[in-house]
Length: 465
Image (cartoon, rainbow, N blue to C red; front, top):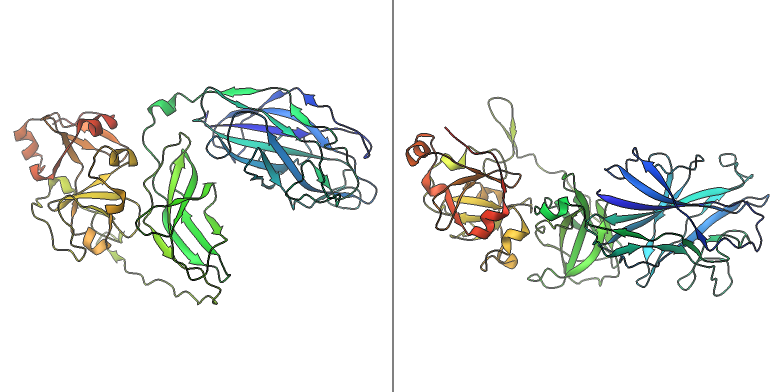
């Protein structure tokens, strides 16, 4: 199960003054097989509670606090807390129910969502119900450990200054009117759920692909920069972590964690200071992608200048196929069958053993003679003491395309040669040396790796004559 989502549906029917909710409630389990926000079939525990009846003039739902009573921590274990308005059928479905927003972790033990302004009551032609039901969903990672517990509460209403609006020190459910029933007493889910890792995470060692088109741009506002990217297409992709540094040689600390959309505004920056950003994709088993290339940007309140459209530098082959490049970053002939025994001359001065990355900022390669080999995972980087993230050279596609891509490997001290596919599986070339040459393979294209990396790859079908 990829995610477990804890959903709270609030439900009660009572007049709107000084009526406390029950402090606990039992769960029922709802089979949710058609919601599109999450990709797997999941079962969600449901706690039924509703906002109180609106006065004749109608009412507005303004804010809510969800408190963490279990051992699950915000971030990697609890990915997100979202609030929804029920469409009237009392069944949660992300296709039909209205998402009101993602709650913000307060850094201690609660998530808060303010500024909702969701109106209900007889004064609204579109919302004529005198009550309103809402859901709170809890997204958790499938890599959560067996000892982790999930237990949540809606705390008792605390309006410190009595102004009726949710502020930093306040907790509970806030409405526009004097309705004070929703959180007169703490509402605790009556069951503690304990989670264990999905079995597939024990064998899933391949991280997702790196986010593409990573960019950092000024917004025209003081102290702000906009980070944007394209999420990888991996089916188990979960979220993006963005890192910020003021040192170009250090990846820095996480500035934004668990981002599920494709952009984020970074605020609180100092105008005129150069910041360096990178991003990684995270999958549902907590595997990380390779980081993007670092992007430097300087926040400023200067007006933005219009962006000119990019120049189309693509070419077209005889069969009508559009080709952006002819090397590792595009369509290339089989580099395993090409003789490339010497290092080409490059403007980036690429040397034997260098780690390089093209303009897309995604794949990292290691160079050898006239070949480059794709380093498929951050895990592989850690298997070699001389592979350093800060030593990766950002090179032009023009330089990168002077190399042929090789996927042939063998372990040091082992004569067996394997061909690695894009899914991280190794295929043994179960052929003789003479057959290897007759099939056109080139001995110089073989990379010698350590046994740790060889064992990291999955096993695919053997390649025979």
